[in-house]
Structure formats: C-alpha cells, structure tokens
Image: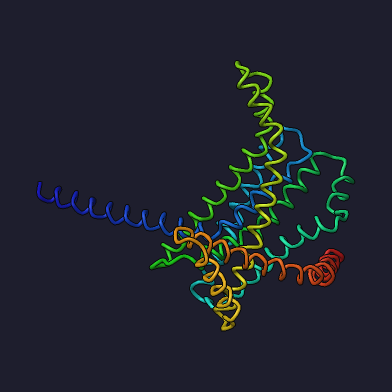
Length: 323
C-alpha cells in the first residue's frame, strides 16, 4: 500500500511539474505573441482581399485552405529553422529581424504611395485574365500562402527573439503555441470579417424584430468602413513594427544614436503632460516616431524593390523555368 501511495505521490509531482511547464509555455507564448501584434493586425487586414470576387459559399473554404498553409509554413518549415538559428547561429537573428522589418516598412510605404499616386496593379490585370473560377481560386490560395510565409517568418523570428526558454523543448513548444495561436487568431478574425456582411444581410431579411433587422442593415453598411479602418490600422501597424525593429536592430549592432534620440524625444513629450498621461503619451510618441522612420525607410526601399530586386527575381525565375 505504501508503494502505491509513493507511486501516486511521484505521479502527482510529475503532474505538477508538467502543469508548471504548460503554464510557462503559455506565459512565454503570450509574451512573445504580444510582440508580433503589428504583423498580426496587418495579416488580418491583408487576407480578406484574397476572397474578394468569389461566391459566398467559397469564402470559408478558401480561408481554411490558406490557414492550413499558414500552419504548415509556421510549424513544419519555419519552426525547425528558428530553432537551428537560436541554437547554432543566434547572431543571424537580428539581421533577419531587420530584413523582415524592412519588408514591413516597404509594404506599408507602398500602400501609402499607392494612395498618394494611384496606379494600376498588374495583379488585378492578371486576375481578370483568368476565366476559370477554380483556377483563379487555386492561384489566389497559392499567392496568399506565399505572402503568409513572409509574414509568418517575421512572426516566428520576432517570437524567437522574445522567448526566454530554459531549454530547446520549451523553446519549441512556445514557438509552436505562438504559431498555432496566431494562425487561429488571424484566420478566425478573417473568417468573421468576410462573413459579417452575410450575417448582416441575413439579419436584415430574417430577424424577428425591427431592431434586429435594423442592426443587420447597419452591419451591411458598416462593413466597407470597417475594412477601410482595418486597412489603415494594418498599414500603421506595419510601419510602427517595421520601424521599431530596424531601430532596435541598429542599437544591437552598435548604432544606437537614433534609438537614443527617439527615446529622449518621447520622454520629453511624455513628461510635458499631466502625470496620469505620461506613460500613454510617451508610448504613443515613440510609436509615432518609429512609424515615421518606418515610412521614410520604406519609401527609400520602393525604387530598390521595384526597379532592382523584383526584376532580378523574375529574371532568375524565368531562367530556371527555361531550363
């Protein structure tokens, strides 16, 4: 009997350790996931465009296919690479973060540039040339998963830099929880967003009360505004996150003058207001200056990306396909 009690005591001890490990993983994942907020917002803002123009019945299946591709990107492709970097080449994490931050700055700046100087999109022209809905869906899903890979790489790298795990397994578990949690949050939100107008239309036609039908009509009218607001917030988040990543990376690499100046300026602005608003104003000031830097850096990258990098990649792709 005493042996059984000892065994049960050992099992209880193991369970406590396991529970503590789970708590540690969840806490670390929450901390790391919070660092990726800007990328997540942009991901949620970008994805709905991939289902525009399709029949309502195909919207959720398309989102589900993209979400599965996103999980594959994060867990199967990127997680092992992140662990290898963290344990064998940690010096590469900061340059890779800065590369991803530059991509975010470029994307955000390009969106603003497109608003200021409207121009046609070759992607839209290519889509209009595709007559088969099934083929168009396949192309859209592939394009979305490719875009997701870049954003997922940035999410996993940011999370990796924020993780303080005592061992490899805790690190892997934390990154897996972040990857799955972010995917569920992003594509669950996207599914809700793209079906919101259908929900509003259903309520407008089928609700039992005038209040319900009025709410449905209001929902339908509000969705275009919601999408525009989400797009603006997503762009601002990209520039803020991208700019802050570049500035922090410069500090890590020994070029901290800009980061120190921004910190001092934000501190001065924050302490120019009432005491209860100091923290909020200081944070907003720093985020705004990071975003302005991100916009400026992105504008510098636009001609480099469109005139040099993109034509080079297309030439390499064309040569590989020719062979």
